Length: 230
Length: 259
Image 1 (cartoon, rainbow over the protein chains, first blue to last red):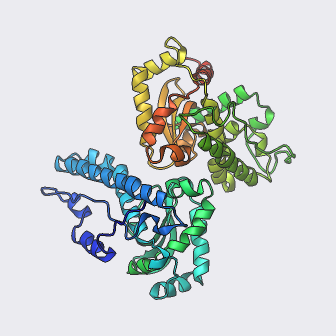
Image 2: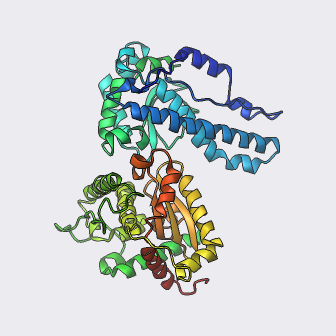
């Protein structure tokens, strides 16, 4: 039932992505071009995160939800580029919410699927290096950080995400809620994100989101999170 | 804006007159001086007028059951917990959300989210029916829709587009605004047009005539990510009799409606 979709390593894909900047090109003031986003592969099979997240959810989440963000992000890019290249400032600005939503949705889901892993690929194993030290310093213990993270998830009204972030200036860790598909940009670097939209868990957990917020820790990839630290 | 208070006042008087509420709601809400809570001062889950399976195949039984007994119930449970040391729960829920600006600061967020959830879902269940009939062309609501949108078809397209475009959790509504005009609006999360312009803005405040829940829990089990299909299915279960009553109520409270 689950398909093997591994075609390249996470590191290779990350390198490819950083080599093809998407955002700067879209806002160039001369002959604007755009880098079309594509749906990144998952580094594991759809069923590999069971029982924490069902294969059915992973497949829908990846092939439908994330794909739709990718498709619509490309449409919005095209619309903004056209607006900017014809000097239509108002139209470009009017597209900001759509850019935030679809572009943010693409960013968030790309990072999310990367920061999950099956148990046999290290999913759920607590961090041990610099991230572990930083968590201890800022929260007292890994468990205390987790408690705060779960509280942040549980407190989200409507759709949104909770992220463990790093302050770009001070290096301090923080846990922040982001509404809808608002991405972690600007002052903070996203380290680890958990999707709290209903589609992330509903088919398996229905309204019992507290269960999902508990079980997801078994498939969290702390190595990837640590790799995102600055 | 001066319109903010006008809209709130109109919605409040409408809510109060149709509910026949007494002197308690005429005075400013104050947790310290209102009467002590009684055992009956708590919101309860209103029963549906139809079975959970009655809206099949458009709205599936499992979703209706979970939506009513879990999601709606949770809003009520949380709201009652937040209000337990007050007597606000003696207010009709529509009245409570219309008076959100008067709720003490420390309770505002909870009343907005949980109270909004209770009000919106209570309205939603009445908005649906297994015995849906088309809105009669000569009826006041149909005429009002034609006046506001040009045609019923354009209204439906406008509503569908709005419901599809909610970027996250929220609702799509057809509301009567203060000038008597119909308008399609959307709210995020559990905001309600009843909360007034001070909370949802001048362009969104109004008296709901129909409403559609577009939180994923409202459609995910059957429709997955395909929200547009769910929206199309909604037209098969809209209670236009209830909607017409709502429209006439709103219009009758306006001194000089445009039509």
